[in-house]
Amino acid sequence: MAAVAAVVLGTWGLVLLIRHIRMTRYFASEEFLAHKAAIAAFVAEHNELAQYVGEISGRGTFALGGSVSGAQAHLATFQNTSRHKYRRDRNIATYQTPFVHNCSLQVVRNASADPIKYVMKYFNIKATETDLAEVENLGDGIVRLEDAITNLQQRETSITQSVNPPKFIIKHYAEEFMKHVGVALSPITVPYPVYMFEYVSAGGNSSQRTTLTLNRETIDAMIETMSAKIKFRKSVAGQRALMTSHLRTTIKARDNYTCRYCSISLAAEPHLLLEVDHIMPVSKGGLTTPENLQTLCWRCNRTKSNKVIAS
Image (cartoon, rainbow, N blue to C red):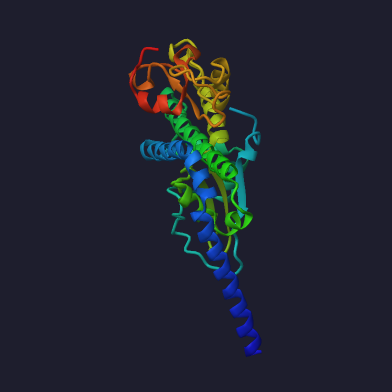
């Protein structure tokens, strides 16, 4: 048996050595170097976009302080976390998220049916113009980050297809491949705020929780819920639109998926990352109205930042 094991290990070691030699030769080959040179500009733009994603993540604020019952239940996840004969300390809260409400079993179940209502009620998110603006600002940061990360992933797929390396390279050396191409892979993820309602029984061996993640869909639902509660239509702010995913899509379509500054379009550049920007920034009194919104490519929006630029 020992001899057989030694033979198997030796064979496997030889396979790994041969594969490593093939990998080294491929990355030094004229074919690979030619492909690398051909897509150099695209790779450089990818890396610049990766830096932009980091900027969005670094400066964004990803935290926050009706409808028929059950209509929003699909937005939440409900979990029975009971463990038989396991005693928890019922005086210690769950700390894996900063947004935990320790409560009765009934509140946990009600939050599962009406997650938006209960998050607003128990996490001090009021139906006011100020809080609505904060929720929309959070949504803007999350959507921009989601779109940018998705765009990076699409670009990385395009880079792989352009070079078309051997299958064994993709299977065994995908990360090594990207490094040799010159791509700076970004580990950035979207820091979604997570709200949790948790019940722990007196004995400590039974618990249940409802969790709500503020992603794009959930934030849109919260914005619409808050707007319906505010009802300030006679005020100037009441005449504004709601910055939801639907409105962003509408503005991009209105502008023919073309940057209003540099005129580059999605038709001309399939991997173009487009964003919706306030012409007059909200921080300077600008409203979320179609006439104050424009489509910009990520480069122009990055340059503009919070400035007002005449188009």
